[in-house]
Image 1 (cartoon, rainbow, N blue to C red):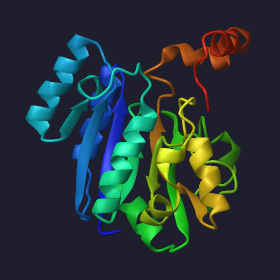
Image 2: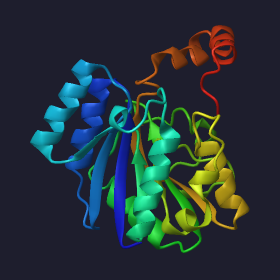
Image 3: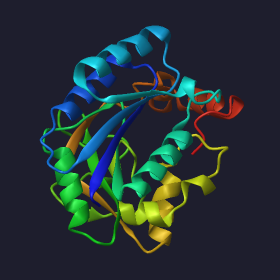
Length: 238
């Protein structure tokens, strides 16, 4: 990997998104990189605010409403666009979602950790709450703090680097377009192609789950209602 394409897909959740952006822009990162925020049909007010932030801070902003009429979420389109560009430039793709705040060293350390492991398909940073405790979606890693875990379970895309080796092996154009989210599928494809997925519990990042889609918090507060909405509305397909 000669460089990184850092991306943040976002729909509204503007305050947490700006926290994400600020942390990325303040990162101590030496590898050549670009940073793009993909605005997935946020409100006009939040779109305007993102445009102002982009002009002030110097990151790229792509408004997906200028590219597609497909309703949000458009995660697949974002992945496909970014994969194409990354392959053209021998780059990895580092996803930092809009409910995650990285530490200054996180992005460079993920890159270094991936490069040091030639078999790496995905390098993921573990997520924690405000108290520093591992939280969703990595609760299964509790007890494995301060390690680099050869992860046989899927990596979330909360803060994950998809290496050039993975991007050259898994064609995102072939992913199931009926789904909304692709971390499980791509994690499994990575393992199936002989790569390894590493979870860095040495690199905790703050995660405020589902800031952009708060209805998904029902999964913890009222799971029966969550699954009713999930299946009756055809939402949240993994």
